[in-house]
Image (cartoon, rainbow, N blue to C red; front, side):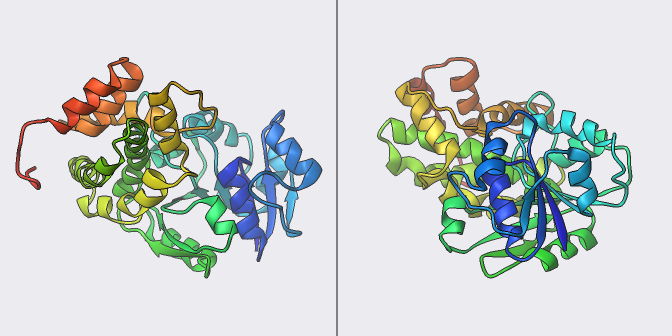
Length: 320
């Protein structure tokens, strides 16, 4: 099978590596991307060495033509403009798999919504999310992830084609919950890093439990299944996001609290803003997401905001 991977960052280059073990892969990167230039020159970066089945392709049209299965792994905030660009090429009937976690910052829209609003040709769309770090996968440590789509047949095809001993794929049945849960866990990850930065790591257990409950309420209000918040897309991804040294979002939160620079992409930053927008639109209280938003965007004292978060009025644990 031929597969195209669009995006050559940490996750994109890993997915090219993963699919390249069994399939022929065209890996595309943006013009001027230093990461893509490095992969073209050395066939390696800090995370992977590309197998023989992967070839780098600088021309987007040629990369799209190479396969009927297109994996996209770019920044969530770049997706709308990129999806619009895809209309320049004949992509009708192809399957697009969004391997990214986030929400559009200004609108709060899910990534499949953004993609389908901009692509004006009939295509199939799925998302592939869940726990796991590139560094662990390339070391041979397996994990489980989830694939979801508005079309169950697309979900089944992707799972059947790409599940392996390294990544066991499960079939999702709640696209709203899968996308919201996957995006929101990055915001909880930033909060976890802030607790680490304040020397309050023992509070991360409470953060995990309350974070999942908060996200479940939002998913339900949006028409999804609140059980999704307790599945692989959200709660299942907590260990990789709230505790791992590899987590960009946790490390960002810790660096932010300590006043240190952090140069990597932390998708939870724009997602915090999007979640506050969604919470307001659906009348759902999101105390953790709002706290992260207040610290990052309203410059509230992190110490005061975190203290206020854990001193909120007492209520039943599973009250709505």
